[in-house]
Length: 236
Ligand code: NAD
Ligand code: ZN
Image 1 (spheres, rainbow, N blue to C red):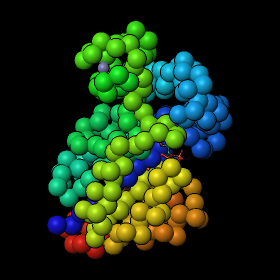
Image 2 (image 1 turned 60 degrees about the horizontal axis):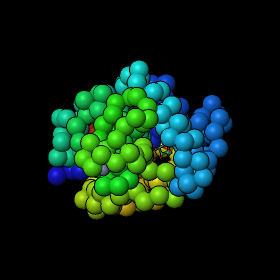
Image 3 (image 1 turned 90 degrees about the vertical axis):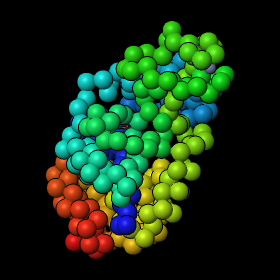
């Protein structure tokens, strides 16, 4: 069976109005990354970090999936055994596009996690304040998003999917490759396609094909490449 691994990043959701980290007008222009997105920052100022994720959660409440989310959902739902969908994104736009079995490598904004018993549950788009763990009643609860210098349990799934799909096609969409080394992953695959709006020379050379366009504009071409690969095992 011809297997495809799709890995997306913040660029996938940019055209839906969710800011990326590193672009101009990205979140890092407004916030100090190590203060609001790191294990150290959380120990130093817990409420500042919880407030930051409250803002992020509120921010995604009214956002809609774009053509690239819909393309991924359509293909995944049509070829559930061929395609694995993994994302670094913590928004729920792939789910809103009705994509099944999305693996969130860095957690999701809608979920809280109990620091006492590890239970994870969905609170929607509201603030963390006032929530207690439905399983053990602890008030020690936090966002379920992986921050810098924290373990990322789902990376195990990423390695498993790379092993499962490595003779196949790797498609990376909207990721700078600075958190997860997408360029390094590409080298394990027979074919690889990268779609980023902007050139990233240090990563681009690792891929068989690079598409420098916005994700929604690149979506029809990516769809064609994936369908062709599933049917023929070749890169169009
Ligand atoms: P990043 O911010 O480092 O890089 C974004 C990439 O997307 C860049 O390479 C840029 O060229 C590209 N891009 C921007 N707009 C695009 C568009 N319209 N179409 C195609 N490409 C576009 O993002 P990353 O690599 O995902 O960084 C990692 C971290 O950012 C992840 O840990 C993720 O959890 C977090 N993050 C997630 C969200 C979200 O859930 N939507 C938003 C911001 C940050
Ligand atoms: Zn608990």
